[in-house]
Image (cartoon, rainbow, N blue to C red):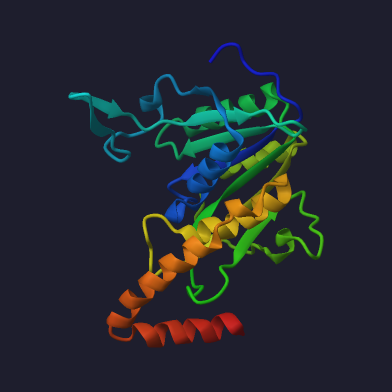
Length: 254
């Protein structure tokens, strides 16, 4: 969208769907910040089918004034100019099915063009945490120096080894360019799996509100508690469900 904005020491908040966005924790957190701060569009992919398989990311049809419209899955880039730097770029990515190297080159080019100072990948993943305890957050990056009383300090440095996303290369290349990088992933109860996990969103917002001096009202932990209280009834109805949660609590407390 022309003209492109002049941004001051921008930080990127990135979400990768669907790999690191279980429960829409990352995308809902982005939406919450965007609604509060306001945002404008930088752009999106002109031909998303170059990277995405639309038999896997399905377009969505809807009716508008009696006419059928189509929402085509895409990567979106938006921004917020704040009263004080840093400004924020919101990068809502989808994992490419083809030409991933070209996709990554494009993201890196975006970071370089706007002279981005910090790149943060955030979202959620399935874990072994019970819904009755505070959801753990794992992190990795090269710029983590949290104060002891900060929500950052509650994040556990990830020792995960295994399958990942090719988009993780963005983080590696950003480090080589001298861009501060980090990631925050909330571990969500695998046995609940709601489409939108509001407790996970609240946990992620604790970190983002602390980092960007946003009001605590954006965290909304109560909404997550109400959702998990409702899902507790479903757990109780499953044979062995309560026993499973008890064992997970014992493991968590150790």
